View 1 (spheres, rainbow, N blue to C red):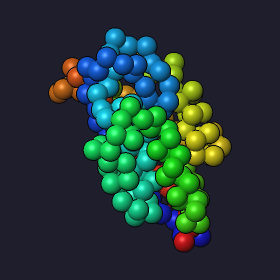
View 2 (view 1 turned 90 degrees about the horizontal axis):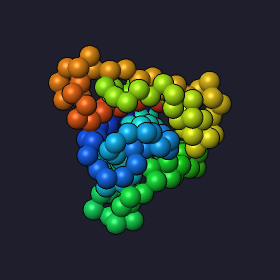
View 3 (view 1 turned 90 degrees about the vertical axis):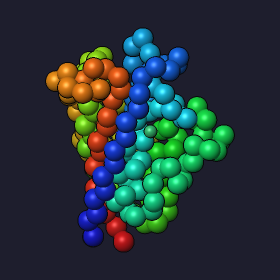
Length: 159
Ligand code: MG
């Protein structure tokens, strides 16, 4: 089996009047993330990592933000669609690892549910889905709580 890797990155800014959603989990906070879809930056970064691993483009190409179909969309649905495309092309997802850089709120109480959501969406065992959160030590705009950044890597086996 040939082993492939893909990297994904996303950032979103706080300030939207809607729930703050990460990996499909609603997180208690006074503001949500801006964005054309639901602003789920973890789902977006993982989607790009998977697409990158198999050189199938990127999330913006598959789900353009000019398309009203994806306005306010559940980003786990987009992730699910990408998983389907990978499986249809005879690839299998091995594992994903995510790092979220966020000053507040603390994500620790939500991490397990987030992992479960990604594992279910990607049909992976829980020990193949990792999500870590850390602060930016109050540095720069992310450190001041303006928004968050997400890094993801995916390992994919297959053709
Ligand atoms: Mg995004």
